[in-house]
Image (tube, rainbow, N blue to C red; front, side, top):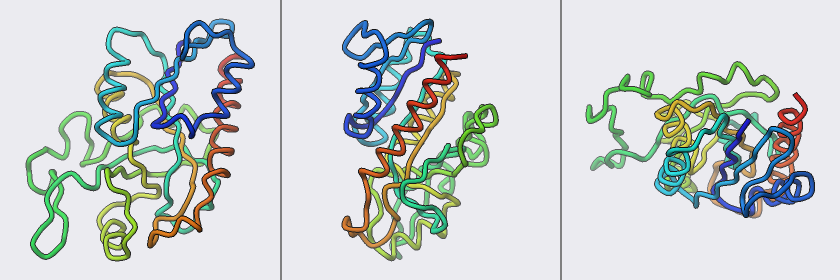
Length: 226
């Protein structure tokens, strides 16, 4: 089995990288192996554009059995707790379109520049068709942006327009690239903060990273022992 671990940054998966170096044979700078499981690590850079290109390039001409996207994000759902880890089941892009004169936002689907059911979209959303095969985590709906929200009005508009629980800067790119390439994938994301008026004092990135990587190492242990 060959797994491609995808993260926007090194710091989000530092504990996992340490675990791989200590428990796997290292074949290359970013390739590790244990038994029949090969783990390849891809750091894409932050944002949808960087992620889409890096992932598409990595999938080109290489057999990958599973893309495992790991990252932290902000909770739009007030019932979620900081540090909790979720399996993202769907994604939407929330800033691809036009800003209207009244300050509202109209996306490409509403502009009819993209069909709501053009492959791989289903009613303007991207879905993970394999999510039912992985029931080890609670599920959440994602929304992806190139500019994270930190203004009260724009947050209200985001919540009113999109049915989502967690905001990230890469999730939709991973969904899109994997669906187009026909590769099985998982997006595992932990909550580092609430999407509210920007105040980093309320964030807990260390806890989010700790819980994210604990989940990732447990998952890789399962793959290596099945």
